[in-house]
Image (cartoon, rainbow, N blue to C red; front, side):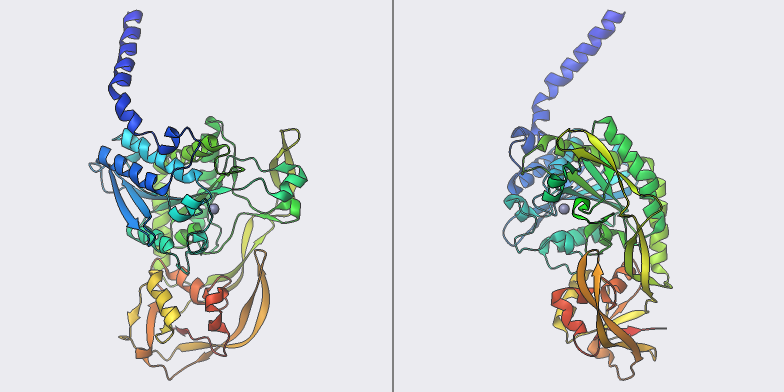
Length: 495
Ligand SMILES: [Zn+2]
């Protein structure tokens, strides 16, 4: 009996192998076909997802052309026959062109679903993937896009066509969970001289801006971090919470920026469970590439499993966060600071000479974000129509606005700028205006667009338009003129 069973099993495996060898070969990613020795180009990305689309009726690809002829494919993967009450997950990769392993991993993930139609992971999840957000930077192996814009510092201004596409897909997909794949570079000079470096295959980061939902931030810390740690350990990959700061050079350690121009915070500020993955980059584009791609791929699979297991928690957390965004808020924190926690950080670092890990106790560790200054949001802002730069930004922003069919309330205010003060936020020198609010009465509705402070974007609107918000529009050189005069041109309609 035993022999027969073994024989049957063996012949079954043999049948599967012989029967599908040709089909399976089609799902080899271009990187695998190239033996992990050459990165996939944008035209190969497009060709490959087209092939996956043709193979599976669960995969649908939309192509967004760029002005230079390259394309951003957006891949939707969905089991059509299942209920429409599924958790929507959006994964994006390679906003930074010189961080390719996430893109290669996304192609492998798309191939996985093309090969395994009807997979359990999609039973309660709809997945959308933008495998290559920055095709021009990708083909050139450069961080920025063809116009020199850092896409992951562009989610507020949306100057780049690529960022506009990402934000459009985000709005149309309306995901409850987003994951943004990057790579960090562990081989910096300060670290080499120090003799130790970070050696985590994967770092995973959550939301840090304190205007985002506390429940979703806790879901990351309490549930997602340990889950992914265990998942990656099974596959032999090392892991840490995304922590940055060149501490050998005297910098403090913290959990990344609170700036809403970064992809993760820009999604999170609208009540989305938003994560960032930082895989370990290579010394050059292809160094250690197979391991880099495999660790990113396993992180993506682990996060999809997490989404399956914690589906109700994510969904309910997102629903509560979005409901709160619809309600009038007492305050929005416009200045925030990373501060010391209770415990120093136990930081495992890899000794370059002994090739072993040493755990450092880092006192200059600032994991807790605190509110320094806040404002009570107005009911709406008024944007002057004669300011063409501001109006063009408003039209790109995705915020809804009304054109003159509104009445001006007696509670309409303008900020007078009385001076400027120097600032240093997250290590960057800058300045903020000193302001006084005065009531205005001679406002003509036809001269303004009205931007109501409600809905998903309400907090983002306040953080963009309050002149004293640390990363508001005037903190960008192109919008500095907004605070260079005596009056701030954007008005507030209060209750
Ligand atoms: Zn990056």
